Amino acid sequence: ARPRLVVIGGGAGGATCARYVAKDSDGAIDVTLIEPSEVYYTCFFSNLYLGGFRTFESLAHRYDKLANDYGIRLIRDMAAGVDREARVVTLAGGETVEYDRLVIAPGIDFREGSVPGWDLSKADIMPHAYKAGPQTQLLKSQVESMREGGLFCMIAPPNPYRCPPGPYERVSMVAHLLKEKNPSAKILIVDPKPKFSKQALFEEGWQKHYPGMIDRIGPDFGGDKVEVRPETMEVVIDGDVQKVDVCNVIPAQKAGAIATAAGVTDDSGWAPVDPHSMASRVDSNIYVLGDSSAQGDMPKSGFAANSQAKVAAMDIRSQLIGSKRFPARYSNTCWSLIDTDDGIKVGASYEATDEKIASVSSFISQTGEPADLRKATYEESLGWYAGITADIFG
Ligand code: FAD
Image 1 (cartoon, rainbow, N blue to C red):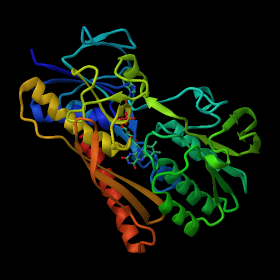
Image 2: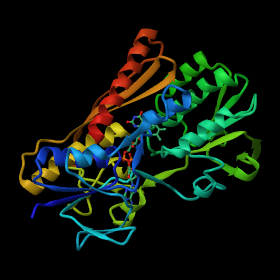
Image 3: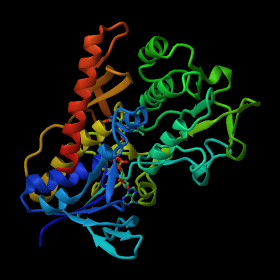
Image 4: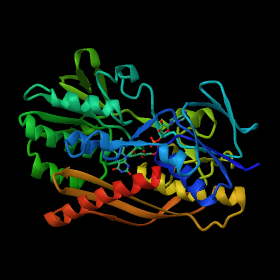
């Protein structure tokens, strides 16, 4: 019988890994992908949808090619448990799936209680929009129907979290939308972190494109002592009650629940991995990819998850069918759009040390860059999106 690879989670990490193992093993490995959704909406570029630069449908990707072109067996269900001794995954529907190697790539879940007053049952009033889909649509419709001169509030998350520049790109895109439709509206960021990704670049851009619109309260002014009251649309910052019109709560995060259920996470809430292979430090038959893993110097991004998936796919093929493996190399770039044609980026390349995935060189856009360079950076991101979604979904 063919050796069996089972992948939990058809996102940037899991779908890439399934595709690369299937593609490069020419049918020698039996690949199964467990994913409950029929359509995957990318979080990447979901902020551009908020800003009106992309349609919602342009974020949608389906799994048909993985099944039809690469022979991957799709199971549309949630993985509910993993028996590591028996090497069996149990599905929410009750069936079981046996594996020789297992990939766990379920993305993130939210830490309960991280924003007092908020839990998932309040997400229809105060959306997180940090897993793309209906939440992203809800947030956009709330911004569009905000009263004239209203207040949009974002509760930003503490580190580490999915997409470090994501909240600040989102603020830029909301500001872009408001500047067109509701120019007297204001944006308030309540932030538990003293500093954030590409801060100087975002702040320069906000001053240039949206002067006077965006305020940020950091931990020195109580940004880390926040509570929300969804029923009355109030945000309480260090005891001060603030009435808001739209509130985007991005809670603290941890590995997707199935990683914890499988026993591969530690006290940090993330799954430690061997930087040479992305195999779990706890169980070498399991690989943890993307946001759920404790990935050293890499940020939690779709680019990073896709890059890790290829390292894992190479290791899995070498383990299961003896194909050659090369030293692990990783890369990442995170682009962000501040306003029309004003794109910025930050990125790095990485190598594996025994201790962690370690950054070996990095780059970042500079303040004061000319407009044509910013436009070229934005255009580069469009090419990246087309390329990476084809690399993930075939
Ligand atoms: P995901 O892509 O979230 O995939 C996880 C999959 O697992 C999901 O499809 C889910 O349904 C499935 N799943 C979960 N639990 C189970 C289970 N028990 N059983 C079966 N399936 C399960 N990254 C970039 O590189 N560039 C960007 O510009 C960028 N912008 C972003 C903007 C925003 C607003 C946000 C929120 C994120 C952004 N990201 C960006 C980050 C990127 O989306 C994530 O880092 C990336 O999706 C992580 O990939 P993943 O495979 O770990 O998880």
